[in-house]
Length: 603
Image 1 (cartoon, rainbow, N blue to C red):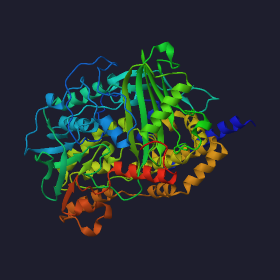
Image 2: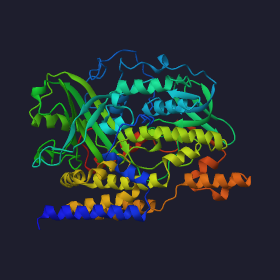
Image 3: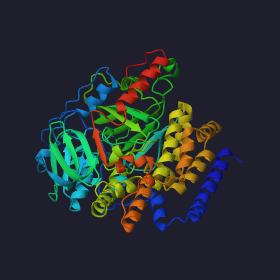
Image 4: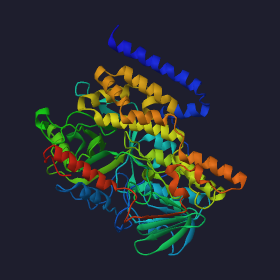
């Protein structure tokens, strides 16, 4: 029997296992709908929006109100950068200004010093704005605190998922298909799914309008320096300007900044970095179709002999392309790496790749330059703890893809509802417990462990094996690969996902999968299969204690919930409970370059 027929039959057999697993786990119709919704999405305006985090900045940037046409933002201060350290690249990205995005102070009422509100949301990025809007819609008074900055990153999403959230109108471009190239022999292949480019102004305007709709959300421009949470009393924050504010609950929506939450002990995250430019170029002078996005071009950026001996030669990267009339956004991306691939190396690869394609950037207008930095996986926040996290700060970034937008957007409504419940039903110091259960219950942790396993696997693959993995991934039935990328694949479905991947892969990929299965990441995945998170255990204990009229007993505490039960928590940005992530990645880069004898680009 031909090999491709054997693979098809084996894949069909693996999918048949799905039915057995769902029956044995007594999956409800709701669970089945969640498993299949990724491939049968329909717009649902009733769903509420949530946000995804971006890092808070060390200073405030002035953003002047302005107007932009769809897809053609006004001039911005984003000149092309020379070689620089990765921390400088990150600061450059965060420091961009956009004249078409109005200041928060011009839209939202002011939050006065010394105010007391129901909830303080720290961070005015997409996650903070969206959660604040959802809370305000439910009648909760919200103090939104953070630097008054615009949305600066380019975001790509699957169009059907954004439409399901009622945000289709914020997409500045919709591509009729997304293309992948796993090898030059196979060429570009469509995945059969529409892709969208998020309009930064459009999304921000929408989230701001939701915050302003009911008057319950007020804003203070400032950097939070300390958070105090004391059992039985209000929580208090203080800004670097000396302003104090009080609330029943503080929510940290600070992106990848982790200074004001406590996280579990464990391994450092993996890393995704990308360097891109948007250039003005007539449609006929580049090879890409305007109505199709290039989701992943895994062809090598330069000839093999040119890569040999370079410090980062063993770390794969791919090309990502979003064309538009008269312009094209091209980006070199490292999907997952154990050591952060420097932006300077990605920039070198992108320019070399374009040269090999016969596209010269010289003499063309560069509209924008982007440096994207996403820590992947690593340890989760301790749950519960008296201060709540949301968005990237809560660990909601997909560790195998870097996606966080749609997942976080979809969680804003349920998280806000849980906060309302916690404010009504839980004593001071435990208001965050129901929301932590929503974010990191047992099912979420099981899925995250599987995604972490996939992330570790991808980071270990050389280019040839990564190409094979991606070939297999997009050959999976859509219900599997779409569900995996969207966080929606229920944990029972992860078994047929793994089995089908093993069956369809070649022998090298199968050996990689087996090796990874017996690695620390594989062990964590098995442990998570029977894990009961402290948040759920604490909630059950709280219910029991309330019935009996007793206070929470220290004998029932989990070690990871020490902050919740310690009586008094003080967190200071100047003395974080764990290392800042920029320190972690820098140490990893220096260690790698030292082992390689130095060189290979700055970082």
